Every structure is written in C-alpha cells, then in structure tokens.
Image (cartoon, rainbow over all chains, first blue to last red; front, side):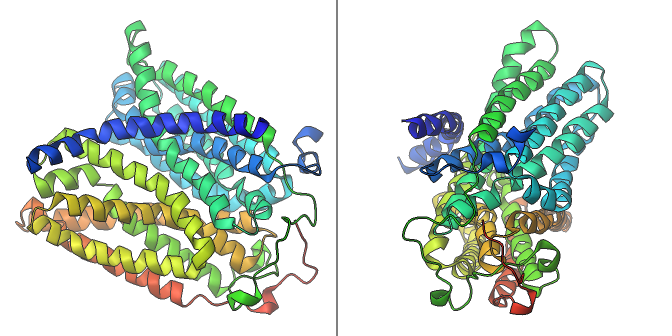
Length: 37
Length: 441
C-alpha cells in the first residue's frame, strides 16, 4: 500500500507533464490528418 | 545530523527495493527543470530590461556547473550517501531559484546568473549523481532499468517545468509584472517538497545485501560485466573511461543536432507553421523521456556494448534518411526517424551508469559517473556549435533553407561513427586497476 502511494505521488506530476506535451504535439497530427484527406 | 548520515539510511530487513526508484525520480524530475529554463528567457529579459541572450547565460552556467560539480563532488557523494546529497542538492537547486527570484526583484542579472546558474547548477550536479550508485546497488540484476527510471525522471522534468512555469506566470502576472518572480518562488517551494520527499524515502542496501536468487553474470558476459571494483581515482586513468567518455559525448552531440533546432528544422524542411513546429518539439520531448527507460531496460538483456552499437548504427542510418524525407516531403517518415533518434539520445544518457557499473563495479560508480558527465558539458558546446555553424555557412552559400540541413545530418552520421568505433574498442578493465580488498555495497 505504502509503495503504491509513493509511486502515485511521484508519477502524478510526470503524467501531467506528458499530458501537456501530448496536447502541445496535437497540431502535428491534425495537419497530417488533413493532408491525408 | 545522524538522520542525514549514510548509516541512518541503511534499509532494515524486509524493505522493498521498489521504494528506491521513486526517491530517485522525485529528485531527477525536479532538477530536470533546467531543460525548460528557456520559458523564463523572455519574461526575465522584460523584467530586467536585458536581451534574452544575456538571460540565457544563466542556463549555460547551470549546465557547466552540473558537469563540474558532479566531477568535483563525486567522492563526497559516495562518502555521504544519497540522503545527505539529495538534501544538499535541494538546498542548492531550490535556493538557486529563490536567489534568481530575488534577482528579478532587485533587477540584478548577476543574481540570476549566480543564483540559478552557479548555486542551482551545483544542485543539478549533486542531484544528478546522488541516486546512481544507490540504484545500481539495489538492482544489480537490472541496473539499466533502475538507472533508466531515474534518468527518465530528468527528461520528464522538462515536460513538467515548462508548462508549470507558464501556468504560474499566467496566474501571477495580473498582480504585477510578468509573474516570473512569484513563479520562481512557488517552483522553489514545490520542488523542495518533492526533493525532500525523495531524500526522506531513499535507503541504501545493507552491506552484502543481494536480491533473492541473484547470481553475478560475469562468466556469461565474457568479462564485460565485472565483479571487481575500480576506484574513481584509478578509473579515469583507464582507456575504458575515456572510450566511454567519447561514446557519451558523440551520442549526446548527435542528439542535440535534432533537439536543439527541432522546431526550426521542421518548419524549414516542410514549410509548416509555428504551431506544428512546437508540436514536433513536444513529441520529441516525450520520446526523449520514454527512450531513457525503454532503451536502458533493453540493455539489461542485450548488454551495454550491443545497445550502444544499436544507437550508433541505427542512429546513423536514420540521420542518413532525413535528407530523403525532405526531398520526398514525407513528414511521417521524418517524424518517425527523428523520434527514434531522440529516443536513442535519451537512451544513451540512461544506459551509461549501468555501462560504468559493468566496467568498474559498484564501489564508486556514482563518482565515476560524475566525472564522465563532463562529456555532456563538452557535447553541449560542440553539438550546437557544429550544427549552427554548418547550417549558417550553407545558408550563406546560397543553399535553400530546406536543404541546408543535409550536410549537418551527414556530419551527425560521422559523429555517430566515431562513437561506434570508441564503443567497439571497449574491453574489460585490466585487473591491475582493481581494488584489492573489494568493498561491497
């Protein structure tokens, strides 16, 4: 239980950072999709 | 001060070693903020009335101090243990952020250089090497995976640091100025909480501890994984140290080739807008972070020498493909190639501590790692200098911007070739360098 809690505390900011980067990279894929149409 | 001593951090029987990687990640994801310093360039420039170029010097001082302090304090880190080092790192790094905030208030560029660059940079060096030897001692069966997790945290620090600073500045800006001062102070407090949390939970294994059922693989690895130990003062006199120094330097220099100019490269080569360029940079950051964990974990199965051969050979092939992607305007292939290149750039950082452990043993591997990462500081100078210099000369010679990168890519292939040769020359360390009464844990 303690280990799970510690992993959650540490992973949460990392996951938030990854989410922000994914959001930032979205335009890259949107344009790819438009080009394919 | 006993709470901080190495003895106080020795794990009791029954302690789960899986509690140690989060301690390392907690520290690394804070100090990884340095990669996101550029987000402060414009706000600090505005606050101080200085050109962005002068503000960015703080970042360069910080990176230089990272390498210098890791090399200088490596032996102290080994003696003092991870908890004391993590707390010292926290004091320097978070203190550096506070001094930089004071610099904003007093409009002093020198305080920003001295605070964020010098003091904060020492915190970076201490924090970077602090958990390395602890992790390889806890995970002798999977050193690549263990150190990969920590160093993945460093890559993740950039993903957190940039949006966090941006959000905080947006929040504080309405109360006056750019919000940079209060953002720096808030970040200092947040990072201090995480770094102290890491220092609190970190433990070192008891002397002689080994994972259940673990048997050293020295015999099966043709001597490429030693069970002996080499001291830091001896290690840097061996050819292996300098070959690995070259391996890391070439791998990093080649990775910076893409990372440093990612957005511009994407826009110049494919004529896309700023949003797409920024999106491309965001995607590369994720691969930079993920590659650190994935590649270093793979190295536990393939061996360190083999995985670096993959970085160098596959990296060179991918770089050689980039001009073709521009010629055919194949953006998908370009993104795949560059993402893989950056994942191997991150992988190179993350695999090197385990490579050092294989060559020199666990005795002073943190201190040896500290001296080796001076090659990173060197690469941080060489890489951008070569890339920007060659690109500018091509543009000045009248080559269209879209094609001006081609020679740079071939140059990166050459750097990776040098790294490959250095890696192939790595042999087991001569037993004359081994410490006679091999200390354990």
